[in-house]
Image 1: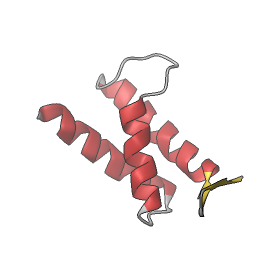
Image 2 (image 1 turned 135 degrees about the horizontal axis):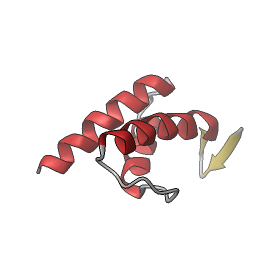
Image 3 (image 1 turned 135 degrees about the vertical axis):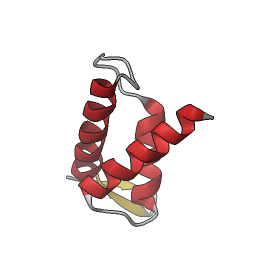
Image 4 (image 1 turned 120 degrees about the horizontal axis):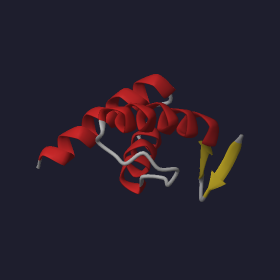
Length: 74
């Protein structure tokens, strides 16, 4: 599904899948709580990378996990 955001078109399916992969990993590792609530910071990381041109859902998820975990250490 494509959603128009201003002049950009965002593939919600890619972003959603990448979020699901990353959130599942981070929940299992204990980095985020095991709830149904969306982690806004993780979603923001994924959307920013998508807007910069990364469209592969697995690569988005992996990069988001790395950035999320790195920001937890600071």
